[in-house]
Image 1 (cartoon, each protein chain N blue to C red):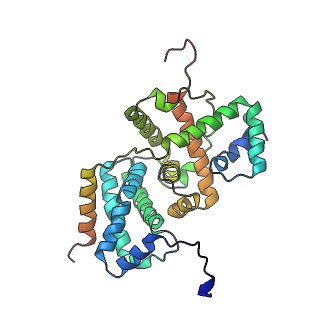
Image 2 (image 1 turned 45 degrees about the vertical axis):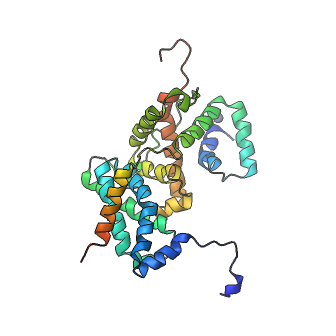
Image 3 (image 1 turned 60 degrees about the vertical axis):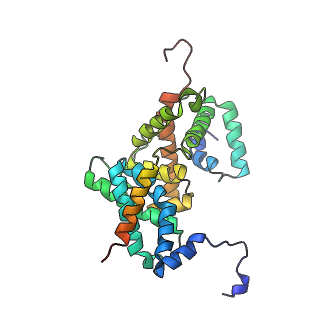
Length: 208
Length: 78
Ligand SMILES: [Zn+2]
């Protein structure tokens, strides 16, 4: 491939250089990567496992694994996506061990349409932010997302909370793009339905 | 476009993955269908309210502890 024709708009992600240095044994470069992503990895693990101690362990395990397997990282995906994938796998494994959750694979809990058919048709007025203060709102959002099956929760977390693209989410979960899209739609609809209990417009004369 | 069609396009609608034609069909449908209008609005609000919500705050103390633990495990004397 002639080097001259490489598109000028293609920007190299700054992680590429850090990863290369880390592979060469540069401790500071690896520490920089840890610094950049430790909070995100912790949040993802916490979302999936719903347990803080587990999330701490998983974050440590994920970085250790990434460090040990750094040579296998080919750079076909972003480093952060690769890292998230490791953390997701660790988290699902942890859930499986714990077995407090009925289904822990990305596939098992997505067969049913249950909860994905809209039933609540009330507008949310006033806005959720006007109905609840920040702490109350965070509490409602946490409780609601906890109620989703892990497969839906994970897709929604990566795509809508952590803002990964659909393609990155697919890569991090080892799913096809259509599979991510279908899970994401159902996750969004289920959350909407559940949140409506809190946010729906109160009818005139109906006790709040 | 009927209600079921609209539902199947909902995610792509929010992710800006729809053709101009489909967007137009959706706006025509929602103009005449109150249920779909509400579903569209409240699904949008669902996505927005979660976007960037710091549901699991990582306090500076926790972050330091986590960071030190990661570094200790990765660079433990073998
Ligand atoms: Zn409709």
